[in-house]
Image 1 (cartoon, rainbow, N blue to C red):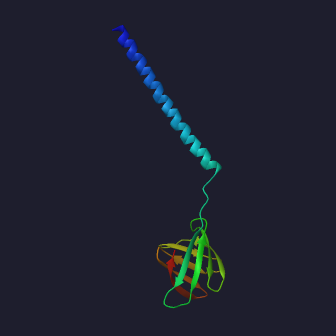
Image 2 (tube, rainbow, N blue to C red; image 1 turned 120 degrees about the vertical axis):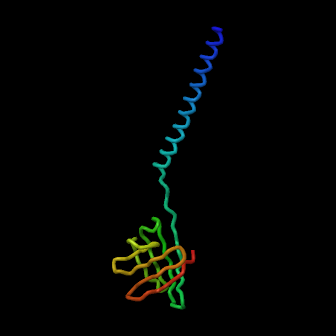
Image 3 (tube, rainbow, N blue to C red; image 1 turned 90 degrees about the vertical axis):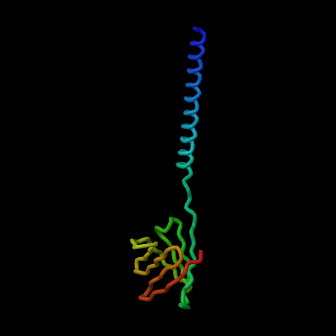
Length: 125
């Protein structure tokens, strides 16, 4: 009986040590992942949208970003470049430059406003 109690006690200690070792291994993996992320942060990929004018309005362009649409560069078919920043919008994403030119779009279509003219377009991703 005494041997059985000693055996059960030893088994309990061994099982407890194994779970502690497993916890240490898991914490080490988590810490290693955190260090790797801090050392090599994710690089934002470049996102580019092609804008195709509707109703034969002649507008085409490209809209590109590297920071998930917080800022973007619009290049139109006249090769004019607009540096834009995100502003508040009711729906979709709206970007505006310092001269009031703006572009607003959702998943399929949008509008570009410049010099008092509006150009409707569809997105060709």
